[in-house]
Image (cartoon, rainbow, N blue to C red):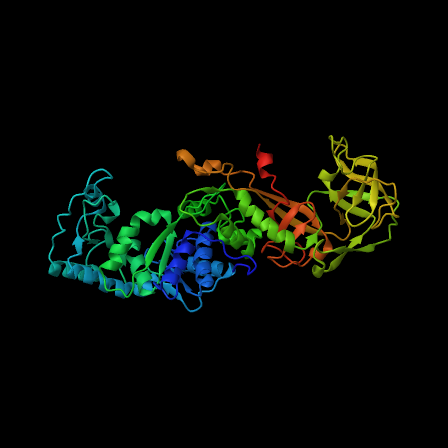
Length: 557
């Protein structure tokens, strides 16, 4: 997906792949993206998607989409479908290589019997609490299970009866027989299978009550699919010896290489699926696709483009070092993309009526304006101009602060792509609230600035008669602090109460009537916005994607 004019940025994984291909170790590469379908994908997953699919694309290899569906208690079809939609939306295609770990359940069971026959796995009767007591600590070795030396015959019999459903949940597990004294706790006879009754798996239904663990399933699935480079985040580095142990001790057709890289940590958000699930379940947000969420669905609804997300993932790079990425980098990527591609429109978010007293009441003009100042290919549109217009309330100050360059009593401004006006009268209600302005319009200034005339300010406007009522949703960062939950703090207490503001009285230019969900625009002088799925033909709804510049840090200081 990288522009041919810009070669992919190199990193240590790309260098490993290049070396493996150059040495003849592999004649082609095969990667995979293996999400668990227990939630929606987030921006951190996008980094992995871009890496795995991007490497395969760069080197003429393949990338599989495989669902790690070994825990039916937390998984469902909604998540399966959303993940596929997100990967496609980002611009990647797994072609006919869609797999589920559950596709391999029968073969995984057979490999478990192979381990039993080799004396490398045994059925254990310790419950979870007893197993923790036997496991030891980082400084003390573990203790052997009293069931560790069961015979092959007994283990085969018990394992078959586990599959047949004879034992209740937690009564027995199948464990690898490795080394209870290993300094790597992951090698202290890890669980390979556990019993789960009464659940319906989204792919296999009720066919199984015996489910393999991730650490057992993942390496064997990679090997069965012929994966050459198994790319995962750093938290799996300590699991790599177990990954290698599994594929070394069963008769799989190849031996993939696991390589770890740092996960994406992004300011002002959380990436834990558990926390994201809690945000949705506890109604801190409106759903998985809430535009404040770091989910791909949320970013899509907020107006982010696939190109911007891919570009961001390329910018942050692939390293072994954990770091916290500034939110401004993500916002910069979408800002640059939309600056080049988004048509311009005018929208008044907080309307204040201006009556142009010398403009004929019956007159309406159609003023032509470019859709984009730098791209003539985007064409033009016309906007009606009439005696009564709406400007943004913030563009007028009765007592202006120093440096204010917009409309003031007795002062002049230019209406964008229209005339110069002068404010002559301020009309207030009984409470002293400004209700409208009355102004004089210089009809000799359409599209020109007479010699010697100095007008410093330019403001946007919409015809009061022709403007379309709209709802505008202003979104900000979901959390008030860069690292929510740091130091043991309750991340919920750090939610930004002003992360969503709804402006129900906004008015947009008439060309936006009937806008389709997903269409993106720059509202001049306001920011970049996208039409929300809640839009109707007569009342569009727009979400703020990103401002015209990064002012968030200044506003919080």
